[in-house]
Length: 291
Image 1 (cartoon, rainbow, N blue to C red):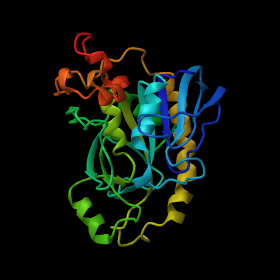
Image 2 (image 1 turned 60 degrees about the vertical axis):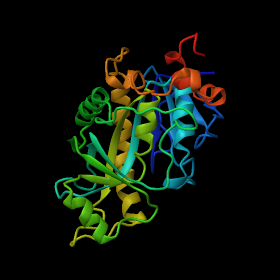
Image 3 (image 1 turned 45 degrees about the vertical axis):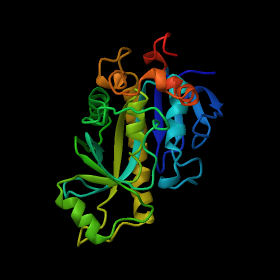
């Protein structure tokens, strides 16, 4: 099976990456089902990349239905250590305009119908998640975005809503009153699962609209989003090409050892079936004597 250390998860409008060579499409199954689509593995700027379209080719999977656990597990099984995720978002700030990009550093979870952990069924783990995005990868993406000529904002809080309907005006104004910056439907549970899998995770958030709070703007529609996204996606692809060559080989961030102190269940009482199911994630923390 081909291997890649960098994963790219494409959002609305980003279903492939031009310039990849030595490409191989990999169909995977996981203990959590099949991922959103086949994963394209190849080289981009000489760097091993695994690309996965979050909504499937042709955009056939809505946010609540995304098989996030299968997606992250499949990327982990290919050797992925870092994920660059692309998201379409709305803005809560006048200064964060449609067409801008945001590299967020915080999340608020407003989802309600999604499984957001690999754990349970006899194995308990509590990951540290105070900093939900990898700071090292965030900085690399921000610098690459500036070099690519993007209007980019460093930092910001991303509200993740359930969808698939867009916000009411009241919801939009509520979220804005919290001092948040952007809203979308897909960064969670991805970011939590990536942390549980000890994969660095960072986001290029492509601003397509002002959500529904702005009195002088039309409420968000799919047409508005797609029109703005075409320009954003081209820029995001440039950023990815720049960023992948700058990612260091060694990982010194906390993402790489997130499970080290997170697993609270004694190995001796872990159900054998669940221990096997999660061996890709927790195997290195189980001593030979306890396995």
